Amino acid sequence: MKISNILIIILPLMGNPIFQGSLDKEIVLPRNATINQYNQTKPSHELWDKLLKEHVSNSGHVDYKGFLSNKKALKGYISYLNDNLPKTSWTKQEKLAFWINAYNAMTIDLILRHYPVKSIKDIKDPWKQKLWKLGDKRYNLDEIEHQILRKMEEPRIHFAIVCASYSCPKLQNEAFTASTLDAQLTNATKEFLSDPERNSISENHLELSKIFQWFANDFKQTGSLIDFLNQYSEISISEKAKIKYKDYNWALNE
Image (cartoon, rainbow, N blue to C red):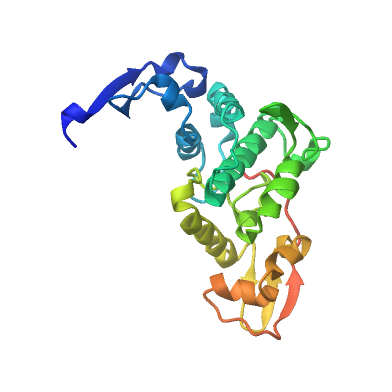
């Protein structure tokens, strides 16, 4: 691209509550674009991605003390989502990425409101508190999971959204994006299934996370549970495999 076709605008992000705690950066816009036009584009999850990379390990352990030091940035990201709700014209992937990121950011925010805490279950009604305003409506975690995400008929969301607990799928240390969503969901599913602490899989015997029991119907949309597992397991599982479910450890994932 020729230099004459673009305009480089330096935005003072340090003074913007959306990007509190981030460094100044260059935003490249088409020459005829305005700042208002830029603000009206589909939201970027860049700030959430930065927070995750800083405060979540590759194994999914969360540094809640670190998140506390960036609490303003986290609240700024949630506020940013408030101003950029999905529109009907968005693709399914764009909507899924938005709501998965929103759910996880709100879960972190919930823990920070009560930190230090040993378990999310030590918080009163953790999934029913309407603490976050998006658009003209207040949401709780249950509503986002059950009324929005699960109704989009993508069972792999169960390995992307987290409950801040040890037995949960790990919190990924990158934001979900529409352009990479399918690969990210596949990776999260495979990682969860291959983790012997969460699932023990052999050809004829399965000890599975209770996620597969709690949301059994979600995994049977196009076949049996075994059919679903065989899409993502490195081990070929017999249709006659015996299934048990592991106890769920609700200790905080830090």
